[in-house]
Image (cartoon, rainbow, N blue to C red; front, side, top):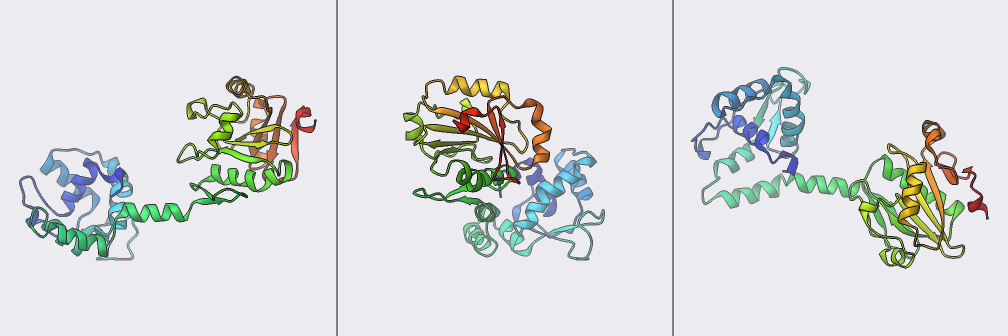
Length: 293
């Protein structure tokens, strides 16, 4: 199970599903059709742990849903058409899970666990496969493919690489790109060091750093889907962090649309650039003479 389901709530829920009371034997685990209200009652009566009724949704969404995905339980086997959020929804341990659980502590445990994993799988592996298949690839010349985790922020970063870069700095090299899941992808640490750019996530580099050697231009790009643009405060922070580099610094804020840009217009620093993904061939210059020089 994923780490989020390795907790007391999930453990007590499983014990309720197999009707296993304190001091009971795993071999006595039994199949029992049970709803969330009765799960809470069982946990309170037999294990002395009280969950409020408003916890029902947490148990349904953060425990039972994953149990179902993992092949541990079946839902509404009595009435398959019953909606999940029905107060009459019930869950029952799957036969293969019950057989595996009953063998815990016996000589058959490893064998049965192996059969369960072979036939049903590990939910963590399934999540990893889904995550990998949903990643967003970025391919640039002379570089291995970079895969970003899915999400609106990273989708906009991909748009910057695919459309901003060819239009405004086609000969630039990708030195750095952040990732909403990994926080930082180490793309070209050596070049960052040569330019005097400190590679430290605590220094909060912008989302994307591009470098064009011919003009000695350093493109510092913030991507805005939820957080703010290159504001006066942010620009001062970056200027201080990058004071050693001799490259000309060009600050760019990338927005998904003009609508999103308008929300932040009063917090954008002068001498910076604005790029809109829905108008990829154009730029908005806040006195951007440096970009044109």
